[in-house]
Length: 167
Ligand SMILES: [Ca+2]
Image (cartoon, rainbow, N blue to C red; front, side, top):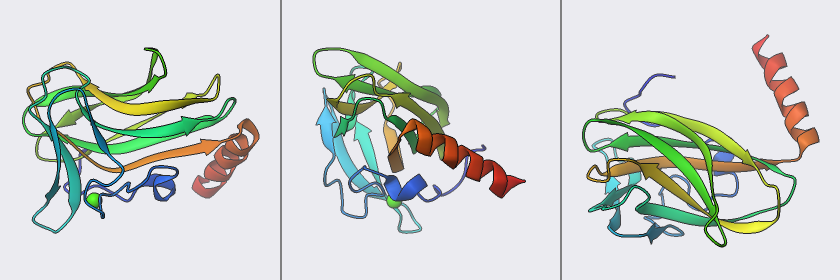
């Protein structure tokens, strides 16, 4: 998918993400590591979240979720940078220090890119959703974040439905 001027709506209404489109400021989002997180508003009145003054790859905004064993979690988020072009990954950090990458996208300045991915939960655990960019000097912007759980059966049915809708 190409880079777009305004982010599209969150998949599945955001799923289990609280405040996925930042209509309620940055409620339910916390800072991970160093730096500052804040709400920003586009010229068209769209609210999104910004992480700035980052110093490490994983610094930025974060939301805690609870993963359930055996479920498939489909993730998506619209991302933009304050400058340049970087690979941004979504990382699920579970208790202890285990981190699971759940997909990546090349994000740019000037337009929004869609990161699509997902993980399979091998055990039930709280997890923090983090975003990683190797270059921490750029601001990371995000909007319309979504995390939707599916059982394997639901996911197969969902994919079948998607295929039917397309054909
Ligand atoms: Ca928004």
